[in-house]
Length: 334
Image (cartoon, rainbow, N blue to C red):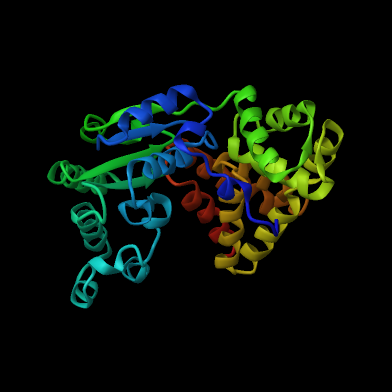
């Protein structure tokens, strides 16, 4: 899509979150820096809800809301962590030279929590996709949470709260972010398409909501695709646009790059599928195998299925989708 993404342009405020129970729970947290764990399925709006909370709770959320995608953060190299503009202010040249990556990450967590807020009386640190945090880093995080509980609020989002160690869970209030209903999804889409001035009917929005099956990100992207390619969102136009949005070409592109040993390019496509398209790791793996069956056979296909079985098991453990599917892509290039 060449136009700005609606998921970014129309990020909800706290009052616009579709799930009333989440709205009420987070509204109670405004002004009270309690630690939270938001848990729910892919595309349910956990990250959007946290950002809405940050906007409501902070006069200067650009500075006082620190957002860390755990899957990316722990996959960074030591140099990338040190040069990231969010963290570079905490890291001296000497520390960068003498610290291991693990020490540097622990230092960033501690300094982020202890850094004075620009406005107000506390910072909020968001740890997104927290199922990817190793247990030793969770122990370090627990100590930071204990030390800075008066000045810093920690908000953790995850698909699997059971992957968090008990001492962290006990220090956070749980907030269940369920998948929005079709009716709630339609209400979100109505707000966006009316702001965009796009012609629509209820059947068209209902079709998009049903297609997304509780994944709000997928619904908004589907509605934007329909609007941009068809000029309106009706049943017929939505069906045509969404049916035409095939991802096979992107999977072919990802496999071509992996086979050529161009891992950075392959992982870039993977990031698009996981973030922009809102697919889960399991969905990426399933579609990848479907595409692979049309281009491989014999031992090559058998080896891919064997490796996919290992990756599928790893995905069920709740760790980073990006890391595990990325491992499959890396092994394709060997």
